[in-house]
Length: 234
Image 1 (cartoon, rainbow, N blue to C red):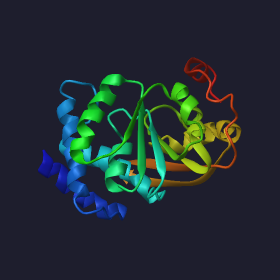
Image 2 (tube, rainbow, N blue to C red):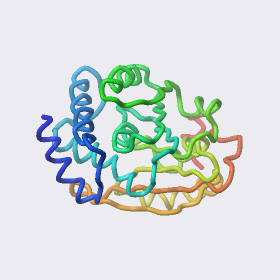
Image 3 (cartoon, rainbow, N blue to C red):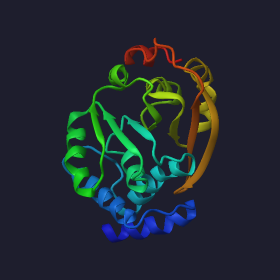
């Protein structure tokens, strides 16, 4: 499994124009293998074939590095699930400060047990995004998230964590452009501004990273309770 994952990853990096620190490719694949192994007893991912893990998890997460320089910055991965995209980003850019946030204790416990053996340092927060923000409001340079919710919902959960001048890094699939159009009102109300979008061909489809700059403070009334966010998205 490791060999297939590693060769797929190494083929894909030049296509993205990325160079990693020495040994980071192997650490990424060790993490990928750990996810697949743990997936046998815990629901972490539907993607388990080694080449697909390399493409759709590892390389996909690393596209964020083409849009933002994370070195020396504080990043929170909101709804991190199995650790994507936060863990691959930390492995590829060890100089960043990573916080992983997810409401599922089992997943967070597994990450907390697994990552130190890979040399990955992180802060772990087990809580719902709309609740944890009370102690962490506007403390991060970047908030990122992948496959959590449609953009207008996602931005209400992530923007409050970002300091003015920082940015939300939203990872989206083929529906990214449509979601961006739908989220115009949310972007305006939350103090954000679209700075750039980049699309990446990814295994026969297109994936998009959207960088939304925080230009003013997010009003204190956001985020609302999740039931309310879902019932009446911005």
